[in-house]
Length: 155
Image 1 (tube, rainbow, N blue to C red):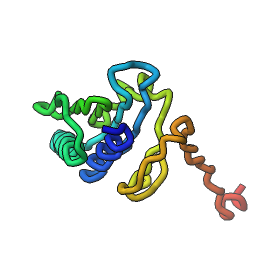
Image 2: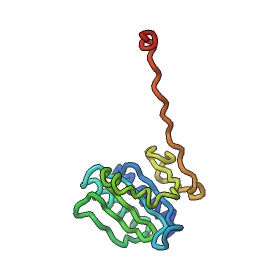
Image 3: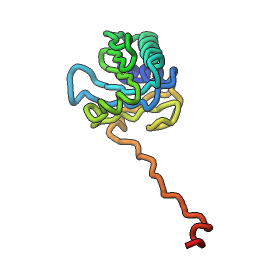
Image 4: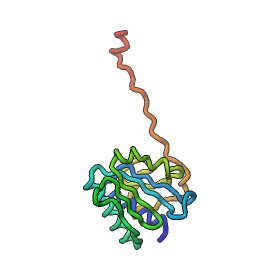
């Protein structure tokens, strides 16, 4: 199965069950075991299990194979091995603690997401453009709040 098609199926499966903070990383230069690592967050044990199930279903519908699934019994960290891609679905506290983005994240892949959750917003049915995989999305820059006129005159 084409890696872009597999990646799209995984992201679609995650979006269907409202995964948060979906990140896709190209790992082909780090290991020969798999080409992509996908990291996403679920808010509860029930949601992480549902996310894993949705990923499995979407990958199978797209013609891919699921090698194995680990961690569904507890649901705090569920790993779905899709062969050329490995999906980590974690609850936010575990995701922050283990910081998988630091290990795998030196080459983020730009992925078009249905909800604007970090990369480029688009419909999940659109193809993924791997040509931009070395470009990182520009982080939003917060501007400091303006002081109100009342506070300025009070000084």
